Amino acid sequence: MCILGVSVLCDEPHKVTANLRHPGRGNIVLPVNESVFDRDIRLGVGLLLFLFGFFGLTGIWQIVLTVVAVLLIVSAVTGFCPIYALLHVKTTPADHGNK
Image 1: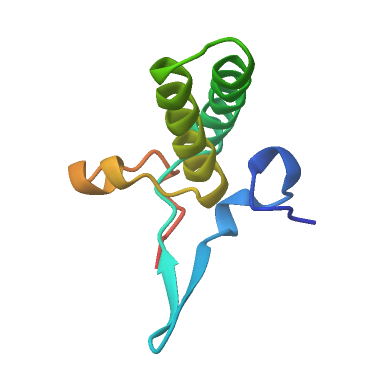
Image 2: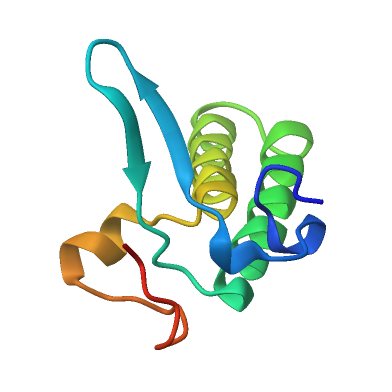
């Protein structure tokens, strides 16, 4: 059973892709370019940053840390990192076969 495609909650996280609905164009499929370990680290760090930013800081730093945390969590859930895509980096196993 997969919940949000997060590797901690998913039996087969390497088979998960992010399907987004785009009006008039159908589904947009983002390739998974993060390994399970990478996604777990992003999720853990994102949750910690979110909690610290939301409860531990005030002012502009609270906003900055919360935004960074949300970006890390979204990246972990979808398995797609736009920075990795720009740099042509994949941390997925070689036999993953993103199509």
